[in-house]
Length: 274
Image 1 (tube, rainbow, N blue to C red):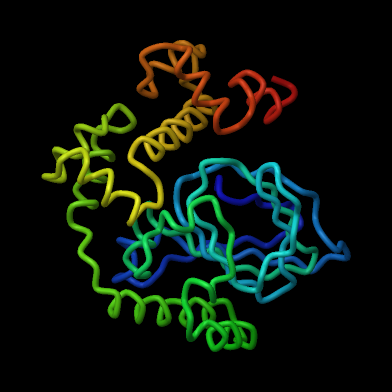
Image 2: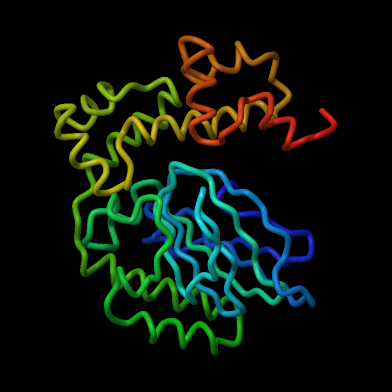
């Protein structure tokens, strides 16, 4: 998955949340390792446009935002939606549960606007003032992965019930985005939500953490990676068109904005033998 890196020495499992949480949470990803290294090699992680909540029950990871100094993550950390890349080096003795929210899912659990944590990696206790230490302690001492998943399900279900936010208009925008893929415009998203463009630009960041324009840029970026790595790739001109760009210059500009690299440089780094 794009929001973190899987290392060969790690055990990696994917679990689904309970049925009631699935509209708002994509997956739980569990990563564990018990090696001799203090930290595993640092890897670059590119944006996926969603919020990720990480519970550490092993040693925390080393996190470094773009153009900033590295630091060791708190035991429970929430990573807001990113417009940039970051570097991650898990501990050699890791135990992590990644809660991968749907693009607008995190906004259903927390009262604060999600755009306030965009491009930030912050201690979860700053966002949720109470109950964090209790859930951390329970996860740390749980005897199984399934037990930890059950604890997180219960914790987030309580937040969902008490937050009680209406997401119908944002859900309608994402239904249109899903149907039209990356060719949708901000104007179309607003119309599908029965909102003006200004209203959408005010509501969208509160749930998603990004402006509609920023999110569409990231959605196109992810589509580019998917198509470039598929058997249907022909050339970069056709790739730009397939991802909703009307000219190659715009395509290259957006790509460099996210990665600091041209598309050719990026994919050469991903696969040096290509």
